[in-house]
Image (cartoon, rainbow over all chains, first blue to last red; front, top):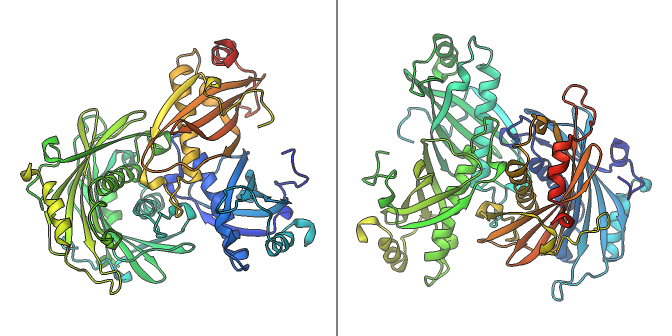
Length: 147
Length: 147
Length: 147
Length: 147
């Protein structure tokens, strides 16, 4: 992926991890985990990152975030049954948005990598608004260079 | 459930176990794991029971099985995030079909129980046909009284 | 199904109808619509029945309903692409619960039939409570014999 | 989106259309259609484009295609119940891959747009291989400028 200096195939790029089990219903007719299920796994990693690290922040601004862009590259098929690991990291912190990088590792190999942009909207005007300082400081802790 | 002597709320009734992680996408607008996701979890337990215990049997008869009936009772909401345990047992072995009992346990409590009937069809005539002896003997080992 | 006088394979039994399109993601590895997707279609028919006919009733009791039992028989495979019709009817009206009957018709044939019991819980005590008269009267209009 | 001259918010950009119904199970806890369901709808549009236009071509090369990249921008929430239209077009035809553009329109407005790259792999070596001429000629007919 060209819009980031991070190597999303490298486990060292990630600062938060979760795991998930593959289900039979994730398979499509060719016997691989389908793209929709892969995208669900990425979403699950993001929500758990948010719940674990951001919801304790003051203010109820979290409900103002919307997913603006989701971009994924698929490298290897994922099989059933099994467990995958989902790595999440903060790639960019902008004025009104931030970018996450994510990868799914199956059998120790990067099967798919995603870049996600999430934007903070003013609940009343529905226009983008600056990230609160407390959120910005927390996000910075999850940038790989911060470790 | 009235058509079985087994108590599906009791962990002792189950002879095979798997576990699965809950996903954010399993939630419906009221914040509980939705019924469709619960049914996916039951299916996952059945497929893994089959793959672990039945596919090694001689013959390729497994492809002839179809799900004829699925009946589920919902007792408690399931929340996110978390891991559930799925217990599976053999309740009945008929001439051309067998019945499974299943329960999902979340936080140690039975959240839902299901009864499932699966029938063996002749691949050519699409009519029900008798269970092979090797399958019948394997299924008997997973009846609770057999332990 | 034995616990109802209604023939759920007969279109005449249904008093409310919706339709839905099949998606590629509904298919499982054998190329049929999987049971989870079929159950989603039944749920969709129930929610639309509720939204179309019950939410206009006085009181906010609808949030007190929970799905207590879902039982489905699968008769024929459903293929992709295509559109299915979902018929819904009221089978039984009890003191604190009511029962729906549903069928999915694909290519004019009944592919699956379901029976559903939904119970009204007191929001505070979480114990079952009697159905309000306004709800009972509305439900009666959707019993087949009432037409 | 910067890597295409096509305006994916404009219906005129699309050369193939399908429609799909929203399901209650598509909703997430905030009452909007969730991103996973949106991605399923895009996949459905792609598969139907392929089945309608490409499977009649000589050779069985279709099974050699894999999804390499999927990128989506979300513009507006999608609500339940309702029907959406999915537009699909060919954006780029490369040597061993081609790119599709897709948008989902709800209530006449573009709710999300996606760019997809699909690559042809040699079934034996699993390395990319040139698109067959018959496929290339068919894809060209679905480029907007070709109309």
